Length: 283
Image 1 (cartoon, rainbow, N blue to C red):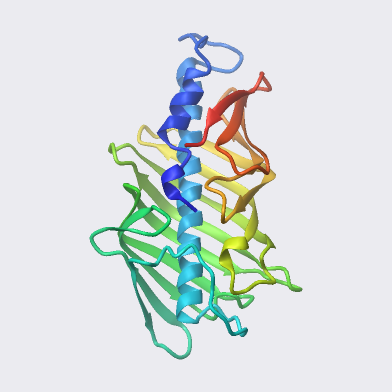
Image 2 (image 1 turned 135 degrees about the vertical axis):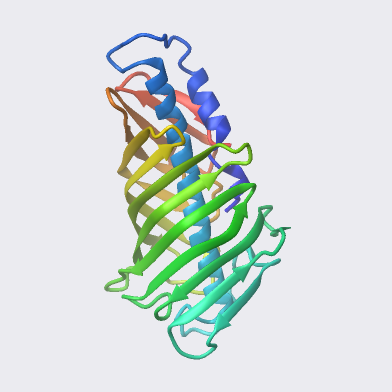
C-alpha cells in the first residue's frame, strides 16, 4: 500500500475540471458551489478511508511482527515492511490487555515509499485475530505523507466460521492536509477478508471488501454523507481501491464514485445525478 498515491487534491481538481459547464445559478443538481463542495468532500473522504486502511495495516504488521495476532502457525511473515523504520513497544509482553506504541519518531520513509512521523497508540483487549477482540487506536502528532491524522479508531473483531471480519468505527476524526486544508470525518464500516486468510504468514496477498457509511465535514461546516453501494475492494498489493461504488449525497444532487472493475490502476469515474461519467485519476 503506497499512501503517497491517495485520491487527493488531484482527484478534486480533476473532477471539478471535468464539469466546466457549471455556472453560479440554480440547476436541478444544485449550484456550482454545492457541486464543488461535493467534489471536494468526496476527495477528502477518500483520503480519510486510505488513512484508516493504512493505520489498520500498520497494526496488522505490528501484530505479526510482535506476536500478538493470535496466529499459531510458525513461519516468517511476508509483509510490506512498513515498520522498517518504526519502534514498536508492547506492554505487557505476555497476557492481555496490551498497550502498544508504534513510534515513527521525527519522520522516516518505509521501504514502500511512505513517509510517516509521530506515534500510534493502541490498546488491545485480546489477540488481534480472535473473534470479539477490540483494538482502540489514537494518534500522537501522527503524519502520513504530510497529512496529519487525529481521532479514535475502534476495531471490533467480528470473525465467524473461518471468515475473518471486523467493524471499523471512526470517531472525532480530523485530517489536516499539507496546505492547511482540514476536514472532520466519522463513520462505521464492515471489513471482510476475501483472500489471503489461509496464508497467515503472507500479508501481501490479502484482499478486503468494505461496506458502510461515512460523514465528512469541511472547515466551513458543510457536510456530505456517503454510502458504499457496491462493496469496495482493496488489495494490499494495489495502490488504490480497485473496485466498488460510493454514493455521495449532496443537498439537491448526488454523486457516484466508481473505482472500476478490479484492475490495479489509477482510474475511477464520477457522475452527477446519473449523468455521463467523467474519468478522474486516483493519484
